[in-house]
Figure 1: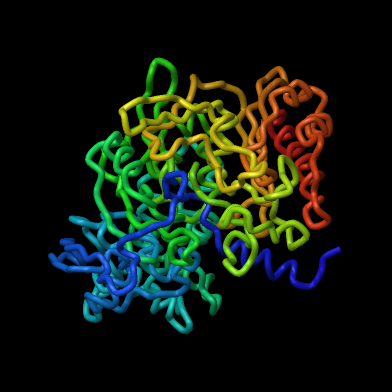
Figure 2 (figure 1 turned 120 degrees about the horizontal axis):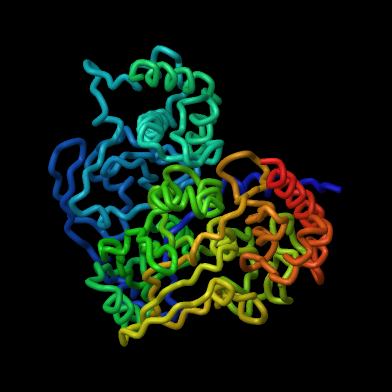
Length: 212
Length: 316
């Protein structure tokens, strides 16, 4: 029998869905940390990277995520902080041509990288086709997840074009097609609390057809 | 996050040496699991050793099979044409895990080393022997729907969350490592992850500072590959259970199961039952299971899922 609370906990557990990962454990972990003693200034590091085509120099606390570097230090507030744990996709940006969760990446690990945020895709006077299609098809309601949705949507069409398979690709050795199932599966890392999914899909379909 | 110092490793052996010499150091690759845990202060390294940029991001065909660099991203491994054609179960397992954004960052070695998703490990207000050795296990007697049914101990009932690792175990992969003194070794997947026993905080066979350089696969097995993952929603969710199989035309083959134990679960002797069907295999594979009331459903779910995979292998 299911008890009250069972589903709630499992849903939250699912939302923490990072099956793949990257932290090589060094065992065992011992205590002791000179940098952690009270009063000491936190370690800082210099960083050079390209953001939306422009070279940027920063000096950051080592703990700064790429997301916080973009928003708090470069004042590019288009990229949003949702869960800050890689579960919602609001922070999605494109780094060296690949979409990532900027909240789960340290800024100092992006030395020399080229980052594209929603501000870099297009401007008010010169929208990226995906931005224009989101407006046309009402691919949002509150708009908070939208920058991440748009960065992801642009990358998803690119990933299909490059032949990267997905969980729903029937024949692994064939080139994946641009279908609703493929796009829905590939967009699952971007949560929209308003539920604009079907309109997002229409926007993506239109851009895909323009390019076909 | 607690403050930490940071360095970029110059070579695998130097990374291992730095990890051994620096108190409370950790390697960081994709960071998708480690940074999540650092934000919650479940992990609090004083020093991070960035192991990106060591040239460990290549997939090479070898005389023995395939050599996958430790830093190959999940997306690239799943999309590699040799993997898609000859080790399809691995590609399928990778694509069943996480989201597109995470697979773009997450690495092969990091995937093996990801920590459990047990809710009591994540909640620092709860007792957890894995997070704080000796503190107890609040999951035992707690909400355990997602947790392990076999290989558990009085100290821990957590599962290993990886899909990729289940396929690696099925394929008899080996984990290549280097230590600070430059010594290398290969650890078979069967020995790589440990059962919790009394020390659930010690999760792998790695020695302090030991660094993973590659994962190798033996020659392709042929046969029909399957990876069926059962979860509460169809995408971007951890497995309740998963079943990985390679089935040969004569009905023999291999079976490994995820979501049921502290490590990918495979009992080679159970595979002899494959010609008799899913019920016989599951009875052997999960003999001695000690499920809770919450997760007893996982045992029939493994059997039914395996039956589905076997039916697919017969028809296709």
